[in-house]
Amino acid sequence: MTVLDGGRARKRGRRIHGRVVVIAAALIVGAGALRISGPIGALRAQRAELARLHLEKSALALEKARLEEYKRRLASEAGREEAAREQGYVRDGERRLIFVPQRAPATQAESDPAAGNRK
Image (cartoon, rainbow, N blue to C red; front, side, top):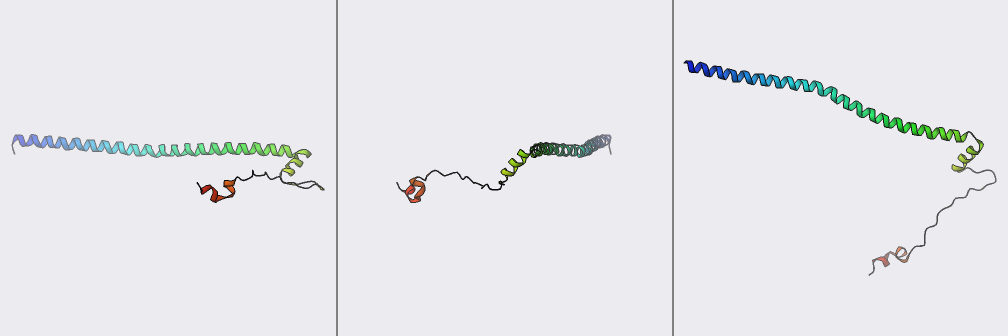
């Protein structure tokens, strides 16, 4: 082995040492990213769940307000009668009338399907 061979070995050793340092640094950065990504993912999931719960709470608040208004309306005799009539109840001696909207008279094309195909 000559002096030149020793210099090459040292350079090769430095290259290998440099690669090991780069690989070790990449592993450390990767491990740190994995440790951080877990809590970040959990934070995103919690925020999405919180947003969903806020929407549900708003819907429930609207329903509660509607029911409170219905309850207030039922507190009076007139309100109870109105609510019963909305559900189809009638007083003794009254008859329930059901109004059905009338359709417009059919045109020739609508009444005769074959007429629409002729030219």
